[in-house]
Image 1 (cartoon, chains in turn orange, green):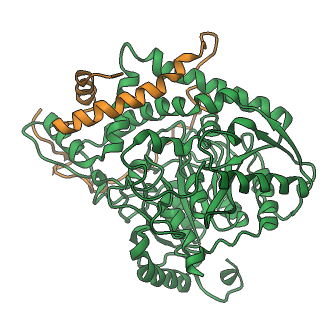
Image 2: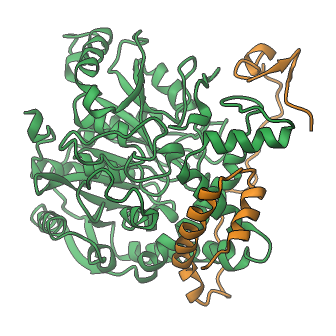
Image 3: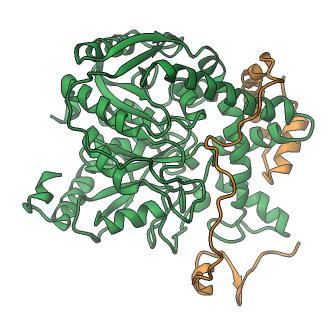
Amino acid sequence: MAITRDEVLHVARLARLELTDDEIDKFTEQLSAILEAVAKVSELDLSEVEPTAHPLDLVNVWAEDEPRPSLPLDEALANAPDRHGGFFKVPPA
Amino acid sequence: MGVVERGEASGADLHAAYLDAIRERDGELHSYLRTVDEADGAGVPIAFKDLISSKGVETTAGSKILSGYVPVFDSTVAARCREAGLPLLGKTNMDEFAMGSSTENSGFGPTRNPWDPERVPGGSSGGSAAAVAAGLAPWALGSDTGGSVKQPASLCGIVGLRPTYGTVSRYGIVAFASSLDQIGPMTKTVRDNALLYRIVAGRDPCDTTTVDLPEPVEIPEREDLNGVRVGVPRELNEAEGIEPGVKGAVDRTIELCRELGAEVGETSLPRSVEYGLACYYLVAPAEASSNLARYDGARYGLRVDGANVREMYEKTRDAGLGDEPKRRIMLGAYALSAGYYDAYYGQAQRVRTVIAQEHAAAFEQFHVLVSPTSPTVAFKLGEKAENPLAMYLSDVLTIPSNMAGLPGLSIPCGLSDRLPVGFQLIGPQFSENLLFRTGHALERAIGFDFVPGRLQ
């Protein structure tokens, strides 16, 4: 297995996913198969090659700092599952 | 399109006629998730993939976690279509968060292929492709990350463009993998495609990755390919898994390029095809794991309550996200995590450079590169649903050029087993006009009948 059950639990925690026991088993198996396939990239010696993060050579796209109208509060909160005055309301931390 | 231009029908008439057709015939296909009753605009109606934010119209990206989400603003492409007077017909079905190649990963049930309802329409823009192919929309917008416009266009027998990265705004588009996502037109003909591309393309101050087009979009007229040098990359045309019927139709189309006056030669993209898929399935999930972190139940969409905020996040994400987003989020989080970053994500970014260099070298000799769009014709529902890796292989021919930010056009080039075969044309960045010219000339010569046999 390219990834262990504990590692799957660890990344699920990192990604804030609560998984059932069945899901953990299924994903451990599927992610192992996928990781074995994508590990193919390590066959190449690319120590001299620069990484590409973005397909276009754009740097520092600036805009004038001009104030513009923004969303009214009620629209910004229109899709909120719960609100308290002008805030998104969530359970206690 | 002519009936509107000649004043024989108004946009509202067409809109109403399409809604009737959708009510009558979309029950079987499920290409739409919802329709819009009122026609806003006098032009040719349009359908949007459900990840394109449209003010006041629910937008879910095919995910239960966005059920009930109604954008309070228009995406830039929606605003441009509105300004052009194109009334919205509705929002089309898709693989959840654009993750998939069959539309079976939709949180709201699959879409079926109008050529054969036992088969998938491709994905992830399968709803848009099926709607256009079935005559339930004159044209539509989709989005393409690894092949999600080109591959469903191929499987449904329509024309699909994945534009050069940076030519169409992503403002207001539900993000999957931001260095790859592009919005693309899905149409019946290449000329329609160029028209729609002209409406949506161009720099947008709200998306700083967009650029001005170096030249205006031309609606193609010429029907010859004189002076065009067409390269046939060996690895894209001889890849394992290409069906003989697909290969046959594509080879005949390559021969047609010659007859139309093009110079045709063989070329090679050795590492792009061999390593492209692995590169994509590291880069795209890594970006997705970051982009999908926003779905936490706090600000919009689904919320499942918990005793504390962390429990609320975890329960909401477990209930609202389907298996494919969960797999990709975990794969991405793993590839980015301490100890694995260099071996997986860092190495994939270097492979991406190699892929761009190989394509650039091929374009020193050729103007366009051609291949099948998909190795297979439309496959049956359920055939690959349980095997993520087999599904990923559907995009093996579209992914390499996408990694390099290159534009690609898929046009129907014939049938195999009574199902459409797509022909992929790839050009250098910003070569859309040449792709349209080449695609149009081929389309005229092929004379593909885009009405599915069973609907004639």
